[in-house]
Amino acid sequence: MNDADVSKQIQQMVRFIRQEAEEKANEISVSAEEEFNIEKLQLVEAEKKKIRQEYERKEKQVQIRKKIEYSMQLNASRIKVLQAQDDLVNSMKEDASKELLNVSHHHHSYEHLLKDLIVQGLLRLKEPSVLLRCRKADLHHVRSVLHSAKEEYAEKAKVHPPEIIVDNIHLPPAPSHHNAHDPFCSGGVVLASRDGKIVFENTLDARLDVVFRKKLPEDASVSINSYKTHAIRKRRGWRLLAKGLAVNWIIALGSLDIFSSKRVYKNSECYIFCAEIIIRD
Image (tube, rainbow, N blue to C red):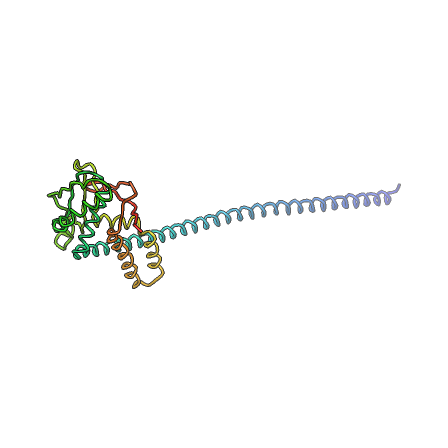
């Protein structure tokens, strides 16, 4: 083999090696490009996932804050409604208390009311001898109906007329501008057993407390709904309505028969038997 053939063969081998090297380099480059793209895609997806998680966390925080703010606003609104209802009921009760002061001014009807209050207390106590306490201004009216009250009680209870002792200690007088903060009584009587263990307060003020505790929940609810949905000028109308209902319940004692409840409420001086009222047909 001459030198030309050897050189030619060497050139072929060089070209072959170079071609193999180029192909191998291309394969390495393509493989590296693919690995790079895969790793880049993984990194991008991982960052996207972190961003989504962070966004979801912040979105949940925003939703929680919204719920908390809504709950706080709702509670504040409920407190305002309850406060308005409480203020309205207290205002109606105050107006009714003022109206009760006029009950004792009608002497004939007030004497009839006192008699029914005494009979009612006797029926509740069922004692042969009781102490009776009233306002000093009502002594004349009480003494004028005492006999008829004992007879009516004896007829209803089928017993002998009881002994009623009018106490020398009187109930507080009606409220006035001079003693606005002193204890007061709008009228009525307080009866007690001779040993003082059982005390039954049947004053007009105690009756008013019973009325507002037992008989006015629906009226208070209607009043507060009206208070929220109507103009302020309507408020006095609801006050007058509830006040009239309360005073009518107090005056309706003339048609009362007997108490049915046995729940006991503690007063500053005695235990008050507050009862569900049964009205005669």
